Amino acid sequence: MSKAPVRVAVTGAAGQIGYALLFRIASGEMLGKDQPVILQLLEIPDEKAQNALKGVIMELEDCAFPLLAGIEAHSDPLQAFKDTDYALLVGARPRGPGMERADLLAANAQIFTAQGKALNAVASRNVKVLVVGNPANTNAYIAMKSAPDLPAKNFTAMLRLDHNRAASQLAAKTGTKVGDIRKLTVWGNHSPTMYADYRFATTNGKSIKDLVNDQVWNADTFLPTVGKRGAAIIAARGLSSAASAANAAIDHIRDWALGSKGEWVTMGVPSNGEYGIPKDIVFGFPVTTENGEYKIVEGLEIDAFSQEAINKTLAELQGEQDGVKHLL
Ligand code: NAD
Ligand code: LMR
Image 1 (cartoon, rainbow, N blue to C red):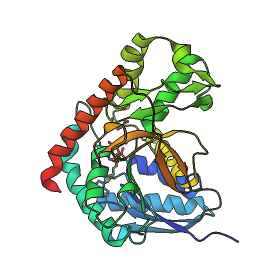
Image 2 (spheres, protein in one colour):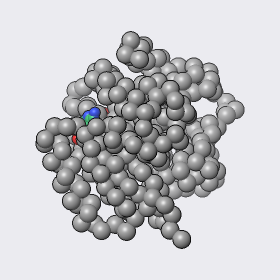
Image 3 (cartoon, protein in one colour):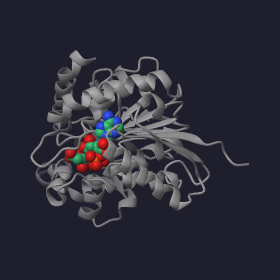
């Protein structure tokens, strides 16, 4: 017997990440090849954006995806989020050349307050929310604080792109396959301060730390390469990452919904005080997922270098949080 469709809301649906994301959701790559979906797409009311969204919808129709049970176009979050089971909050203003993401905080705070309120009012009471739009951790925090009737734990931010970037760099460094890497994580903010941590990671069962055995490479090459990858892509493309960002969003929701089978993945989730991160800060942590729930991997040793890196990314997040306090 076929499953009942689930509702997936995507904001910024006519943007570049949207274009790389929607077709993969509709083909079953995110929620499984047996799970029909209804897409509830949100764009700003602007005529150009709504027209672009119409074009994307025509293309979705022309793919004739068997799992695509419905498509809706909206300009009002109260309609787009109605009864939604998943909400992928992508729509935001992307960073252009020379801009720091902190500059975008105020403009985006407004968007995520309104969207958090709308989710609170009309979404499924179990809605799983992924914030992609930058600054992603703080936007997730704002949406969570604006939705007091929904479980705070269901508001997450995307650190998976950083995780995937780190895995790829480590595979190249160790001459192994990216799919053989386990127990990698990225702590903190989706920003250049994030701390990609391979101290516990293995490839083909061997310790990556032992294989690399080079703290100078870690500090001077690996961390800056992963941390500044977004800026490097903007410099090269003139546009921020889109296909890799969409891919990370698919990975994030798929693992959350369908389980990580014991493997560690990185999610930005509200802290409950783990590793000394103050409650409610949306922070990148190693998690495992099962039955639609994630669990932070606890009890990892934090050495002095790691503690310093974690303190730095935490301080940045607290600064962002202070910057939006008056809006909440
Ligand atoms: P884009 O400009 O191509 O598309 C964004 C779309 O969002 C536009 O079509 C715009 O009209 C729409 N939009 C803006 N405000 C909206 C609102 N209030 N409601 C609904 N739609 C709205 O940008 P993009 O390249 O798709 O990137 C989207 C966001 O994702 C940016 O903030 C970017 O910085 C971020 N990003 C995050 C990561 C990550 O790893 N977390 C990676 C890449 C990009
Ligand atoms: C990325 O990491 O590619 C995005 O967050 C874009 C950016 O602004 O860095």
